[in-house]
Each structure stands twice: as structure tokens, then as C-alpha cells.
Length: 117
Image 1 (tube, rainbow, N blue to C red):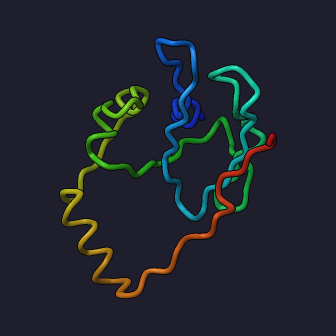
Image 2: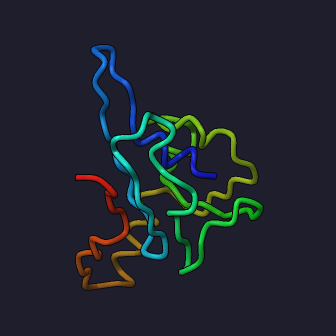
């Protein structure tokens, strides 16, 4: 369930680790430990969705840009998901969002937090 979140960290050829964060919805919050090894940085207990802890026995629908869903951009786990639903192109979905909102406020910066400094 959290494999996509773990894919934010990648080991480069020179042995360094890069962090390529993905944006999460306002209803998703999680914490990570940057000192843990790759694929162990996020404890499922630290993932909150809609104010509730992540339920590992439940299915969740995830929204993402088309290029991510096809496994591009370093997130191959997206290709394993089932029942994809494409409603419109990314461009038109974004334009519709902008028209609906008219004024866009910066998001809260508390969605993703580090347990270590």
C-alpha cells in the first residue's frame, strides 16, 4: 500500500540517495524517517487518510497524472494497479480545476513530515 510512497527515494549509481517527492492530496498525511534504508522509510502506521490510519486490508483509489500511471517518472508500482479510469487529459483536468477554484491558496505544508532532522 505504501510502495509508491517509498519509491520517492532512489539509489543513484554513485551510492547517494535522491528524494523525488510526490504531491499528496489534502486528505493524506504521512511521516517518514530519512535515516532508514530505502523501502523502509515510511511506517504504515504513520500514514493517515481522511483522518484515519491507513488500513492495509482496504483498497484506495489513487489519482495521478497519466505519465505517472504508466510507470514513468520513477514510480513503476503505478503499473500494478487495476481499474484505471481516465476522465480527461491532464491538461483539461487542470484547466477545469483552475476555472472552478478561481483563487488558489498555497497548500498547508503539514501533509508530509520528517521524523528526523
